Amino acid sequence: MHIKSQFFEDYELGHKRETLGRTITETDFVVHAGHTGDFFPHHMDAEWCATQPFKQRIAHGTLTFAVGIGMTATEINPEAFSKGYDKLRFVKPVHIGDTIRVVVTISEKKDSKHPHLGHVNEHVEIFNQKDELVLVCDHILLAKKKEYQENN
Image 1 (tube, rainbow, N blue to C red):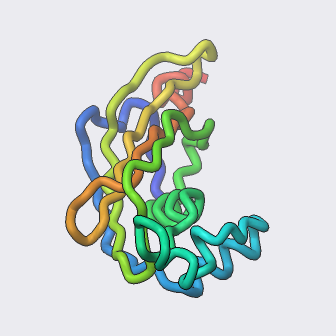
Image 2 (tube, helix red, strand yellow; image 1 turned 45 degrees about the vertical axis):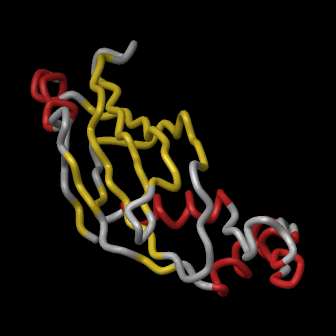
């Protein structure tokens, strides 16, 4: 991890970055259940899941989201901050042993109501080892405008 200043003007529409893979483990399931209190059998009971149509435990959607977003956190940008996430969808289940990777694409830039800031939208796609989309969302950033910094 390192520090890299990137102002609103520096973000380029269509620019993509991709993470390496990370395999989801049983430990991930257990730790996430402990953090959230979500011990539903879909995530924790292998015997019960074997009797269900999906036949195996399913990762918490919030686990897939948290791990995937964490994988993208490789740079500290002092010129921008996260405003949140939008349009979050769990497209396909993730299981123990699946390996996920993340593709982030700059999909939108627009002015903010604050003249010194701009909105940047990062479209986030998480894929499994079969290149199947498993989660999608939009990360909304507020980034300082370089022109405003230089003039003030």
